[in-house]
Length: 422
Image: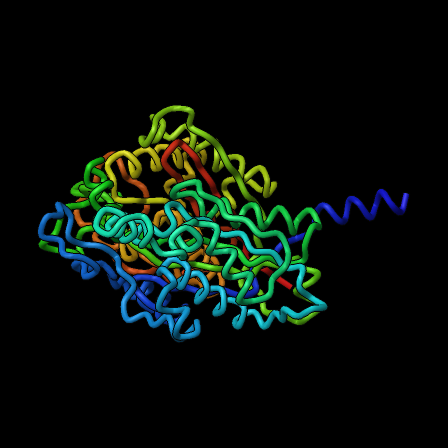
């Protein structure tokens, strides 16, 4: 009987967030990013990474004034692509914030991160070398530093985390899937703590050109700060962003034993597949609705307990419409009472990094009792008619909050956080 009780306790561990780190278009750390978001400040500017003369879209959410040498040795910093540098920086910030110690006696701490495309700029650069100088001149660092799993790999190497190590590449849902998988490992007693989140950096000619070919990006080049406008009637596509959001998550028991501060508790995770289309979401948001329902069921709460949703809210015609319909399907009449916002209106869409950044933002929303706004909501869409916290942040206690991430291929993820009360 004791063994059975022990097993039951083991596979139902509570999971909490004890540290956060951010590198975003609106700030290179948590404090700056959070202050910008609460103030409704846009991080969208003209692209500086490459000559955009031939590009249809000339704007993006670039990370600004980031110095990789603050987090990596000088020689290593020079050769490390941004997506890895951002992930290491955010992970080091999160670990420092958590006061979690990784040492030989406590190194079974895992790392799982999400990334959609990896080191696209390395692919472009080495393809040019191949064409102009031949295959013998390709960098030996090309393959190792391009692959997406090098983000958790390098975090592990730099921090000494020897637990489960994995990278998830589920497009724009990758960061949330990574957090969900990490949550499950702790919940099931496999590890006590995980370093998790998402990262992306593909503001390159090929990246921007590829999304332009799909007609997915905003072309509001004359007004960058106004370009990302989720749920607004005049939205014309998403704005590509970059950065990283990393969290330290632990079992509640482990966190309490070491006296850790707690931002929020992770209480639910859901996934679904649309089985519909290469890039378009399923009509009426069926996949998104099933994903949110799975998340709510995992948390074993009622939909009416949720106060806030950090929406996927990409600023594309179909996503914003179908996510709105999905929310109405899940919540019914209560949908009109939920506060919803898309912080992509300020950061742009970080693709595989979005879920990591937005889960951090959702945890900060619960911790501080401030809901960041959806900026640029100026011309309401009659079909997107919920409360999107337009243009100004809102001070409000949030007890339960959900963050949504939906990706190409019809892959969906939702994570549910709740206020931790001692």
